[in-house]
Amino acid sequence: MTAEEKIRAMPKAELHRHIEGCVRVGTVIDLARKNNLKLPTFDPAGLDRIYKLRAPGASLREVLGMFELAQASFASYEAVERITFEALEDAYKKENIRLLELRYSPDFMFKKAGLDWQKAHDLINSTAVKFEKSSNMVCGLILIASRIYGVESAERTAAFAVKNKKTVIGFDLADNEADYPPALYKEAAKKLHEAGLPLTVHSGEEGHYSQIGETIRTLKPRRIGHGVKAADDKSGRTIELIKKSAITVETNPWSNYLTRAVTSIEAHPLKKFIKAGVKCTIGADDPEILDTHLNKEYLLAVEKMGLSFEDIAYTLECAAEASFLPADKKQQAVKELGFPYRGSTSIGVCRGEASA
Image (tube, rainbow, N blue to C red; front, side, top):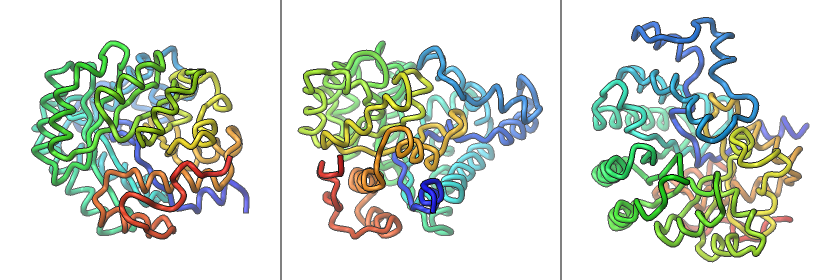
């Protein structure tokens, strides 16, 4: 069995995937026709070339700008339901994902079409619940506050998450970290912590590694999204802070290459993190827009970054341990992933003891 075949057959876990980045090209075209939306072209091959990023962009900001076509696709409640279902279907059937945390930004997804947040969220949740019942995949929803929409939007989104904590497993801060420092979101984070909603934060994807330390000290997240800039701290203090704080880093190698967070896949610090004992997971981030999937990410990790299959197993166990899913769902997910369940806080080897 080749490495590619072995990876394809492997049950997987994904903690860092945006619904907005899961809109298929064919779906963009169908929804544009149904809702009288403008597109650069209605030719599938032509739109595929425009819609998907296959080489590094100028910056994270430029890459984020490519999401406009996906954003416009959320033009109706029917569209929200379809896109959510297809995201779940692709993860399960194409990537053999058994533990999936999907995240989305209500302000980003629903603002353009003026959709009601509650109605749309309930539709996303019911779609996930139905899919769970017809598959061996366990799902959870994370709400995102998009920093670019300002503090008021973040506080509104946090309040919405707290109100819906029966159907929301966690909260995230995403996009432009450099212009929106952690201190702006201290009050929102406090309310989330008080409500028992765990926090993950996009941090260290761009800019200076000091942002990661600031995020950890100010917002007290349980996970960090991307975190690649931690490797730039030659003193090793940032990596040690991540370890000491028991934080799991959600790495997204191909995404980091496309946004120029790393100079090459080979230069990605995932192996360095694992060797240092950092808890890490591997994610695809925005599969459709970034033209990737977990099978591709795992293969890159093995063939380009030098990870062993023991390292891959370590990231899977770290994902199961760090998941925001409630204990009963986590137990089910762990069973699907194929390793023994040892309680909600300690699963297998995910204690910084993976192979180097």
